Length: 500
Ligand code: FAD
Image 1 (cartoon, rainbow, N blue to C red):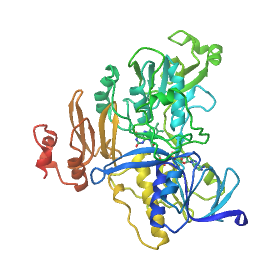
Image 2: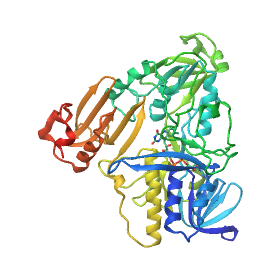
Image 3: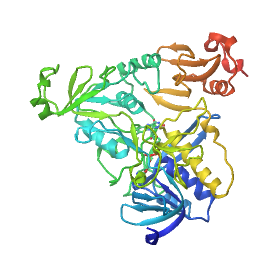
Image 4: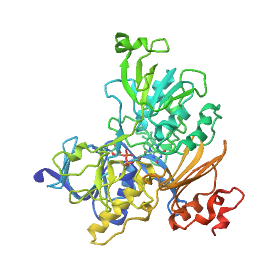
């Protein structure tokens, strides 16, 4: 391998998603005279724009897909290599690309993301949603669909069931309540009416911008519109692209073949037992169990005994980290969720190899108020911090774990409500050692506070509550709130003034 190296870069980053691009930006600007390389499978890269630190741990930003030339223009020391990494040779410090080229590195950061866990690979009517191209496939299937089955209870499923119009949705969740990854049963109850209500058209500009390969001019931003999608333009991506992120469905028409607004039925506490093609279904005895008649391209048998025919199935049951090209022949430690284990300096077990974003699993001793979730914000934070750790290592400087890993915080939107999640928002890992305070105004707001030994350790805020900063402070300060009791959520008290 040594002799085959085309070039050796000081820093090599694999993956043009938010983690990889943020890491590249950090290193290219800190070491303007060192060679930096970004290897990415897709033709476009993801960039963070309009970054805003909203409070000590909360942040907001937009995401743009851009041609990589924009990055190369900004950082003359950066080379972008558009080929997937096929193998990694940690002994000789080099990577081999799918097109057979070999490049050396001094320090490497793997940011190859994750892909959807599919219920089955074989059935073309079972779709996963990951990148812009898979959304196009989904949208095309949906335009002709009368009924779909969505399986999964995480963020993607939540967004889909709310956004899909003109098509009946059967939503199979393994838990007792919807949105279990983010909410408890109370919050789910608060949100359920939104699925039943007729959705008002949400107007407003689409923030996500996308450049196409046909029009690579960096300053010619294009809005990611439904029109563009319905014409089926495809930038020609063949390799897996980067995962989508906040607002991914804005501006994309998710319209089925029928004239209905929302028609969602939830099947609780069940998983998929089996998926049949229509031929398999006709041949099986299961058809006698089928409640509804009619012929469908695919049938889903659930563990609750029900079988549903549908046009297609969306498998939104989590992700698998993309580690395959890197692990073969190397001595990495993989976590139970399949991620590359990293320590508090984003280092893997292999010398000079770091990892960040969805591909890695944070295996340091976490702050009691933080947990890893494969989210956009954490991909940015990890990519940025990995870049700083690589730099500190090169400069023999010490570096402390970044403050962003002190408190989990996530700001998002579900069912058109603003949602803020803080700390152990679902009392994760607290067992029975906690109490909950809840305030709920139907259709307006849902506020839940998790207290442990009188201290606030987590919160769920749905709606325009305006409480996020005060609660963030109370969680970070770990002030004893025992004497305040339920007054904490008294709507007649201006809590901000109270704790000033
Ligand atoms: P990715 O963005 O997946 O990027 C990985 C990159 O690596 C890609 O460029 C890929 O082409 C490249 N790559 C992969 N393998 C190789 C290889 N062998 N060689 C070279 N390059 C390779 N998060 C939120 O916070 N809020 C949301 O609302 C939200 N919604 C989501 C909706 C959907 C439909 C999906 C799929 C995800 C959503 N997420 C959301 C999660 C978020 O998108 C991810 O956590 C985040 O994008 C991860 O970033 P990353 O850089 O680690 O990986």
